[in-house]
Length: 183
Image: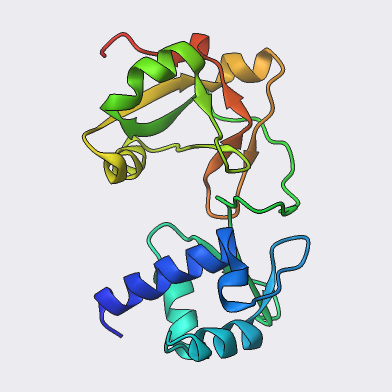
């Protein structure tokens, strides 16, 4: 499978596993899991050519590790980023001292005023690597990376989780924990 096809299928899987399973009449359980067999069948019936080998290749090679199989490989789900109500079973975890958030420069004034909001997603996404944060931010325009004092947030009682693919998650980042000095 070429990279263009893999990217197209991966974007479609993100859509149906994170936001709109109804687009292909896919059923997700409360934890966001879909049956692999049903996903493949529904994708194929909606002109997305998919089989177990292609799906495995996408899960294994996705640079952001967006998807995960259950231990028996019978189910699949997105690791995070859902706009649907799902319970990913995340446990609270102490974050590193600093984490990073990539965003478009045009969003800085709003972030200075309101902080980082989760919007329609379950959580604000933070990264342990600045290059990953920059890559995420560049999807939305000219990007910048914000440094978040997660150690202080945690000490102040704000909760953090880490998804299976290493993304750090929190409900909200107030402006006082964000370093804006270089912006």
